[in-house]
Amino acid sequence: VIFGTYGETIEMTRKVAPHMSRSFFLANPVNYKTFLSKLNMFSIIDVFSGFNTVEDSRIEEQYNNAKVEYQTIKSNYAAQINLTGVSSRKSTSLLNQMIEKKKEVDALKVKHDDSKMYDNVVYLYLIPDMSKRVSQNDNYFTCSLNRFRLSDDEKQGIVNLIEDSGQRVITVENRIIDPVYVKFAINIFIQMWSNYNFNSVKSSIISAISDYVINTTRRDRIPVSDIVKVVESVDGVDSVSVYFDADVNNQNYFGEGKYGIDEYGDIVLTRNLTDKLGNKIDIKDIQPLFRGDFTSKNGVYYEDNLDGILGPVNITLRGKSKVEK
Image 1 (cartoon, helix red, strand yellow):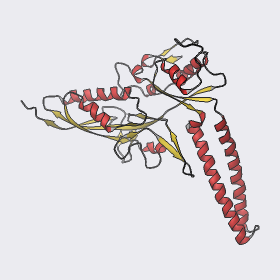
Image 2 (cartoon, helix red, strand yellow):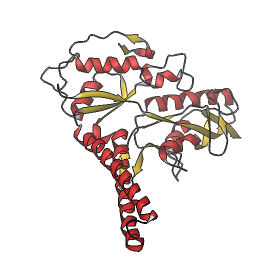
Image 3 (spheres, one colour):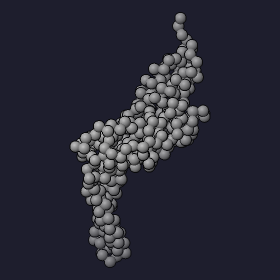
């Protein structure tokens, strides 16, 4: 069972996918992307080996950090016994800490080694094609939030399709990763021509931005300049300025004090983990969600509708330019 146009559920044959030869095996990311793209269901398809996922990266970070902490305690213990001997209270305390930390390191090493060796799992990062999930009566900002995610039934249907295609490598397990959605709002200030109606121009801008965010496949960033270009193309707009605002909770994913907006005002779609050894582990699981129901770092609340005081898209008329005859 897999989603169809506008998100309705449809039955798909659990046999070899159309136009797929059984000689075509899913042995690498390129083959997976080719297979999945022919289903015409996704706007973004990424394929990772197990060791490139967030879970495995976190295990590596924990393991590296524990090793550093163990070496620190070990050094402190050696220094302490030189000062007070092995029987002192401080030396005994440090010895117990060292024993417990060594147990932690050993346990994490097992998980870490399993993670590195467990390369028979292929993780699929799939973003559904929103153009097929948003009805003609809705847009990006008004559709149901469940349109942005694959349901459990949809994910199982995709895995079943791969399993039954006859092209999966028998020793490989397939799993679908849930994207990390981080919330943003778009604030727009326009100067419009005096012979246009503001409400009409506003509706056209919302429609144009909806089309842009539905169809964008960018994985690195969403530049302010992209939104400026979209708005400038709307009839009636003379000039425009744009800035993004972000959910304060975005820092749970980007790091403390970071909300997914860089110094240039662009939205960044990559993040990394840094362990105590200074190793940076790049993670690409971020997907922007331009919907409300969040509070910014400055305490501004954005509603999840277009009719409130502030919502996911906010258009302010800065002034009107006189049309020269």
